Amino acid sequence: MNPRIGWPSLPLALYILLRGLDATVLKGLQDYGLQHPVRGENPISFCNVFFLAQLTVGLAALLPGRRTLAADLARLGPADRRLLALDALLGLFLGPIAYYLALESLPVISQTLLFALVLPVSAVLARWRLGEALPGGFWLSVPLIGAGLVLPQAAMAMGVWRMDQAAGLAWALVGVLAFSGSAVSGRAIAGRGWPPAVTVGVPTLLTALVFAGIALVLFGPHHFLLLRLWWLVGVIGLYALTLSLGRELALRRAYRHCSVVVVSLWGSLTLVVAVLSAALLLGEPLTGRVLAGSALVLGGVLASRWSGPIRSAPSPVSGTRDADRMPPWP
View: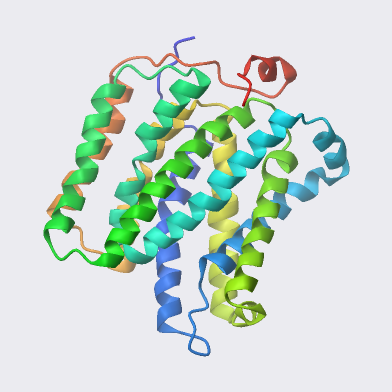
């Protein structure tokens, strides 16, 4: 099959919207927590935010399949368990921590531009690990996207470069590698046809407990007692239920019908949502360099759409037939 990179499906379009709003909402919560400390402490931290967000996602995915969960887990082989553990480590633990810490030091727009590097990195990893062929215009897209990323960051570097921004840049690069790896492992998991309770529920619930443990070690039990109504509504209602749960379900659905390259290419459009939402909701400046960089990134995305068909591995669907065709995971 030589399917073209058409307009995104509904799950992929929903993922683009929710993923684009993620950084803006999280940055807004961080800033609001700094302005409204509780007992002199910012009640927003990566520990309690991701604990509640992932707890919400994990329970929502686990409960519908709880009756067959033990049998489903028993059917997993050692390689399957390693694949799930790797995906959780990269996409549910290391990636979110790096994402949060980068956002603490960088504006939403700069952070979003840097994380657009997930596109070329994940596409190359998918080519190497899963045998997915790159789209015809990939090597045209990469320079355009790279230029779009470098332009605003170079302007920042020529200005006043603070040490915390350097730390944010380092965390952003860690996050890019983690999320790129999880894109490939997520695609491999989607090809197995496992139920959501196994692929989402168990790993997400376990990493939520890890975040709870980190919060207890770093801050103590009182860290979960600093909650106020705005915190519960903002973190649980808006971030956990709407963004985290909705984004995760949309992404998993998109991976069942699209390759890593297609998801990554269209996922770059989250940049538009992030830039506009940061400007409208947080007042971040839309400079000429930011707009030019965003235009280059979008040009890179569209270049692959217009350049011709993409040759990739068959889109995975549920069932053992497709699971057998997926390459083994080390």
